[in-house]
Image (cartoon, rainbow, N blue to C red):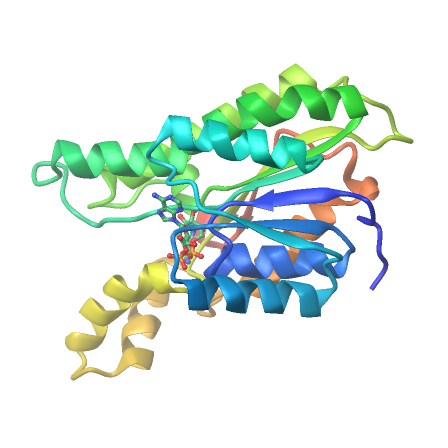
Length: 268
Ligand code: NAD
């Protein structure tokens, strides 16, 4: 693979597993130093580091800020800045809780908004001025189809993801003229996945599987049949490949977008 991110430093939130780890591996393959982040056991951290180095990262570091804590995010951004980054910021960490609006507690609302939306505000606010100074910067925010359309029982999640799409568009406009074609410019985009095979969909898959005598495949098939016309889940590596392309110099004029990877879900 072409090493077009040599000399660049990426911070990928929530990258000890799932989509974030796949993005970290893809950016590593293009030559970036990788700042890993998430809430995880030492085993999971060591595994993520080893996988990212094996994928081609010249160096990795782990950051453990709890994204519900603005002061912890600030401390993480200080440390990343001392390390020389981030040139590439991927706000990927996210949480989900399916519950009706009437039954959603303020605690659920506050946690989902803090991690999925405010976390991105805190990291972008700190990272983007230095990107503009360097003339190159990439922010890739992992929103969701639920940043573009709604579903029942997901009010806090949908609100957070619509908010993330809006925040990204404003930042894209504010930084659109930074840098130039040669330096690569500063872009901000959202990726909006549909059903993707990671831990976050576990509870929803389990609930459907239970209705089919514990048959996981049947549970997934039912979820897909409702919303995702391709009837195929995405593999996290496919989201990783798109994030790495958005970070490439070729993508200097792609900004302010919210790109669905959803098998046609939002085309309906
Ligand atoms: P995941 O549960 O495997 O990963 C979530 C990550 O977020 C973990 O690394 C976790 O450590 C981190 N995290 C959670 N709470 C945190 C906190 N308080 N502080 C710091 N880190 C925290 O799920 P995933 O599917 O890989 O999710 C990645 C992103 O993709 C999320 O934003 C999610 O909303 C989005 N997404 C996923 C799907 C899907 O079908 N899997 C679909 C659309 C969008």
